[in-house]
Length: 147
Image (cartoon, one colour):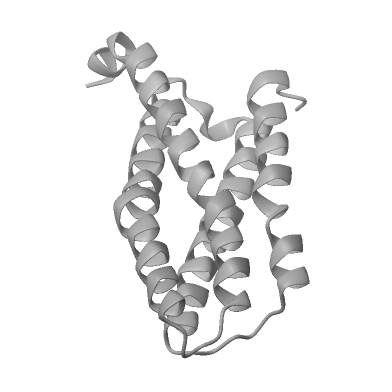
């Protein structure tokens, strides 16, 4: 199995990066959708359109991408035996944080669909910075490997 993973390493890596891009796009888009969603009246026809858009983004792009990112990422970690390396532990921590953020976004989408508006536009705009900061730190861990 290990030999197969080594032969496929570059393909695993390419797939991982591709699905990270898809996932990150969703992590950037969904909070922005929430801002626009909350700006419309709860009884407006536009409200139902935002609920549908948010659901499709999660269902078609974000959830599948999250699963593929994790599967390919774990296969890559196993292939290069990253488990004992400090940079990998840091990266894994940031990815766990982004995964938790993803789950929180999905919960917020469900709350919005029920008419609950827990945060204001400013709070949602600030939350939109989370994936960018996490992505920068993850890239530093993977490329620079500072420890």
